[in-house]
Length: 430
Image 1 (tube, helix red, strand yellow):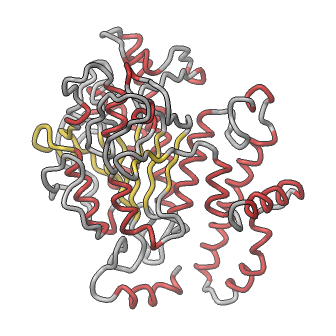
Image 2: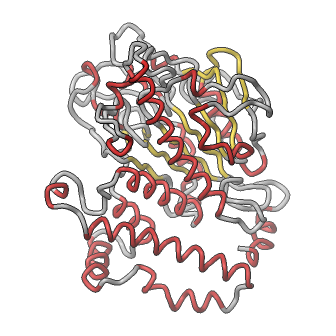
């Protein structure tokens, strides 16, 4: 808030603090993974620099052009076949944030590497209530065999706390909401939730006295900002309550209450929760798998009954390619909405939460039909607290490790890391 900015600047001093901008405000980092690669020709800008024409898949982001960079020629070599046979989707999911190669193993004998978000969380997690946040929409699988013999844990978890510990993405909005705003711990938190639900009370009812006291000490702009924030919390809470109230019995058997029936509403709600977590400085590190690798979800609202993964194996079929294009545009639209939300959240220094964030949107498969792991579709959104040069198409040297981008982002967070996975250096170009 504006009234707190002088103290933040004084605390920051002449040198920025860990995960903090030069103005003393939080620096956020997020990684959004989509599945099954891309129609790369529809993704790739035809020219470089600031004057590039927006390619077809990215058109939903056109009004945000100065808020992100398209970065091409990045690669994940660790997702390639290193002699262990087929299984590109499992290897892609595993390597996306780790830059490590997943080998086919027996049972639960997992061995991968720590992911970039968790490298950051180890060093900046103490600054916030939650060291990091892992989100998804299709749950997770920690056991069993999935893609041609790979353990399912590789395919369904993009965040890894260690070489053997995947962090499951949370797909239930209610669970995330309670993690962010629920009171108490363990059984006490559950009891508080039951009381609110039984009495139809909002979580905001428990902080009204604090809000009134705080308002007395705030200026006009800060009071307006607080009102907008509380309205945002209540809106999300109402969306979750609606999903719980209207959950069909047969659906409730397969999904927990709080998960909307409508897939778009579910994806948007998870994005909104991540935005709120950043706005409240509940965490500065997050990952979101908008679909697990190999996802074969149909999109009936788009008139598409076939599964996404099935359609990406189009072998040049124009009808299938057109349907994949619709799905990719749909995902881009959801991401664009998220960026607009972050950009609408104004900080005390006049910038937005998006300006003070670094958000990767991408996949470890380039072309969904070819299953290549170079020429990856990658966006880097946000201003990084003024450290990123947004508004461009940046074409790098061919097959530049994507982990080089990650090490550059860690540098901007003040996180000490010699390397991430197979990184070979930093990207000064971004």
